[in-house]
Image (cartoon, rainbow, N blue to C red; front, side, top):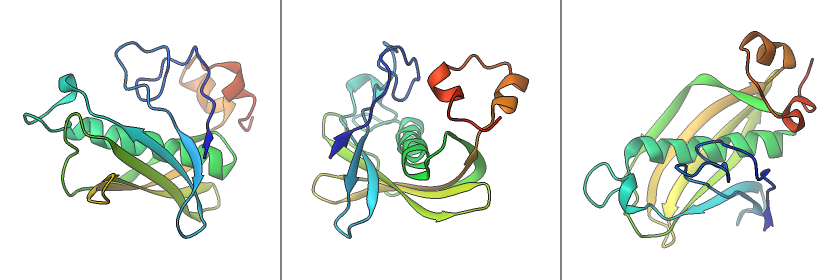
Length: 161
């Protein structure tokens, strides 16, 4: 497995090392049992991330799957991507607080403008938690400018004009 680089100054709530309130998820590039490349992230829900007592909040579970999907779209798709809905989210059981889980995301197809990604989370024993199927399209510098976003240069450099 290879740790995917995330700049120390990133303030993303899902993966940013500089966000003190965020999840600070760390992504790794790995090869699945079937030989396909995937992005993986291990996480341990904390006491202050609950919905129902002892269970990870459902919205945070979705966030973890979406974050893994983004990294897969970018890393395996080869471009900076943006989400294009709708997505299909299914929840089997929510991860338990204090117990380690893994989220895996991989490309399931390519479109003219981007990629489709399937992400799933499970316990270390293999019990499924949930899944997210989403579509990602190439982001452009023009879209970023119209939205008046202040993105770091390393992201802008990889975008279409």
